[in-house]
Length: 225
Image (cartoon, rainbow, N blue to C red):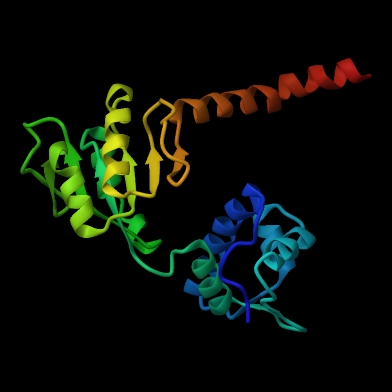
């Protein structure tokens, strides 16, 4: 039977590719595609078939000789490996422009995440409802998180408010934080933090565009000749 828990020292790139596999497999499943080969997965994601097989082999043997992978079975197994075979309730801290946009995004529920509580430090926002969720004062964060058993929080607050929000989350028992604030958080080792720095991503995009633009490639070729 395939293993559902990740093996020790799993390369981060492998876990990231699992999410890519899942998105593509879900598209196949919605198109009522029954099976898929490692070569088809590889072509769709710009990988090699050997890489796909190695990635999946970290967790067990999912393929069938002469058939490949059964799409619905692989979708189920990858969701189990990623931990998204259940619905995770999420606390959102920050109901400004970014927080409101995240709250209105419909894709979270499909992937197993539901924003169940929203908090903000602005008293003018308290009591307002966005997408059916009432905004509460940040002072209620610890109480609500403890009472509901929420384990994941999204920080969509300014940098100066992030440390306090993270501290409140940790004290309430949150084990995972998705941080949009441009600041490094100091949390216990038991708490997992994933930072999303949008400016950094744009910088990297600009760099890749500059590096891979026609004029740059021409200069690089000229230097190597």
